[in-house]
Structures are given as structure tokens and as C-alpha cells.
Length: 111
Length: 117
Image 1: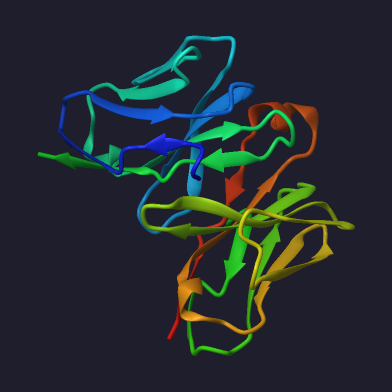
Image 2: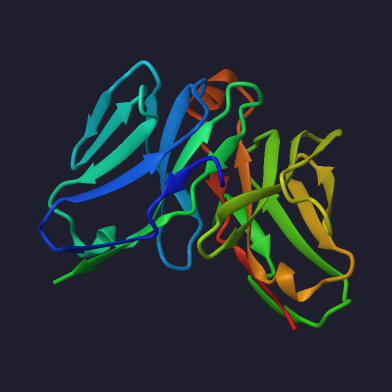
């Protein structure tokens, strides 16, 4: 996961917005992803964005993509205790269609 | 029942022992993957297989081998386990068809926690 970087921890108060940031290095990446890992479970796809988009909104989730800076962010509005998890940023490399993951951001929601 | 099943879920073993982690899937996907997860390092790809006759090394294949026994089964072996192979191992699948290739969605098992003493 060295090509994709994200901060390791985020603590947020319940009801506030969470913003998780990620930088990637492959400018030819066609899709970028956010996966969520709940305690004791595998990863599940949360949302994704195609590289020709700069924003995607899905209910409480907003994904922003800045291709010039190779920066991806995930905003979770009205964060709930069930949002406590590890969030992984990932990119798909155009040459082999394999996913490259970041180290994961552990989000802790406090009351 | 889970679509991607890993066994065992937990295993403690000693240095030098041979270990096999098994993965089976009911999703009918052609592509299967083995990842390891380490704190602060995220997921790193060990091996992947795009169909039964296809096996490819990932970024950290040294010390590991795999076998794709059938479309639904992909096993990971550690021939002689060492302590730095202590990690959480994930099997994943994806559909080789264009729709899922475009979305890049992987479907993960629940993980196998391996401790090598």
C-alpha cells in the first residue's frame, strides 16, 4: 500500500462530520474506492468514483476527487457510532486492474 | 452463509511448521486473491488468480505459495512459517466480467488470524 497514503486515525464526535483524506500516485487510475472494515470483519465496498468525476454523493457520503493533486476525500455527514471502523482508500491501476490499498484510517466516534 | 469462506478463522502455530489457509466462494467469480493485513500497512497482495490455470505473484509472495484447486477454491500455504508472517489474512474474489472489472469491487472473506510463535 505504499502508493496510496492516508492518515491512520480520526476521532469525531457523534453527529459531526468526518473527513478522511487520501493521496494516490497513479495518475492513470481510472477508479478510486473507499472500503469499510468493521471490527472482526472483512472489507466491504462503501463507494467509488470514476476518474472523470470530481464529486459523488450518496446519502451521508460525499466523495471529492482532485486529480491535479491526486487527492481523494470521503466525508461522512452526521457521523454515527456505527460508522466506527477502518476506512481504506484504494485505486485501480490501469495496466493490470489490481487494487492498491492505503494503510487505512481508523475512525472512532465518541458520544 | 457467507459468500467467501475462510478456514481456519484463527490459528496459532510454531516457527517452521507448514500452514494452509483455505478459501472457498459461492459467488461464481473467476478471480481470487490473497491479501495480508498488518497494522499501519494496510492490505498487501500476496498472490492472485484470474482463473483456474492462472496464478500470479503479488507484491509480497516470498515465503508463500498458492493452489487454485477449482474455480471456487484458492488456498494459501506457508511452507515453513516464521514469526513475521503473523498477520490477518484475507481471501477476496472479483468477477472478471467487464461490469465488475469497471467497478473494481472485491468481495472479502472474514479473515484468518495467524500467529506464528
